[in-house]
Amino acid sequence: MRKDNRPQDALREVRIIPDQLEYADGSALIEMGKTRVLVAATIEEKVPSFLKGKSTGWVTAEYAMLPRSTAVRSQRERTPGRTSGRTQEIQRLIGRSLRAVTDLRALGERQIIIDCDVLQADGGTRSAAINGGCVALALALKKLMDKGTLAAMPLKNLAGAVSVGIVSDEILLDLDYREDSNAAVDMNVVSTDTGRLVEIQASAEQQPFHKEEFNTLLQLAERGIKELIQLQKAVLKEKSMLFMAYD
Image 1 (spheres, rainbow, N blue to C red):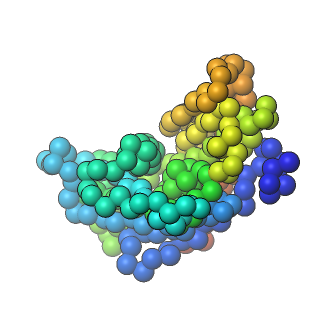
Image 2 (image 1 turned 90 degrees about the vertical axis):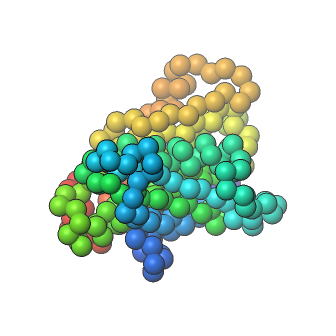
């Protein structure tokens, strides 16, 4: 049995609470089981140097784990440009995932930074950051539309993410830390609300796995992502009729 007694194909209890920060342009607190990530979106009226004069915008992300988000205190990554390989990989994944569903040209020459701070980690922090980040991004873009800065919503689709894996020969959805640490296969999937894939990260931790197992894992992930995106939609619709377009 899983430690929270949920079925193999079930998500942990998920909550997305919008507008958690007064000064952010968009924000959300997401809880997936015991994993909790606070996400804040910041609008900057400028773009990175490589995009200047190209009439397009940019969405990027930063990711960090608070020192006591885990059972043992971790060191802060204090020095800019010296983040760990894991941190760099995760924040690039979050940025790619959110850019994939954003019309960057419609955004104009402005950048939106998505800050993802892990308050408590129990597996699936990158997935939680993407799910919460999509809500924070949508709220920031709505702010630009409310001010009349943008005429149309640049967020073309919603993006969802979840982990799946094989643990003790069982195929599981939404792994917690204990399951992830003991997984023979660990896989993270990102896709849109229309079912189009954005990214798949899959690793055999112990021995190679079969294509049939990969397909089963992918199908399970797609089911989980549909549930997560339905929750995103419900949260956003409560904020504004503008988000009815994602039905």
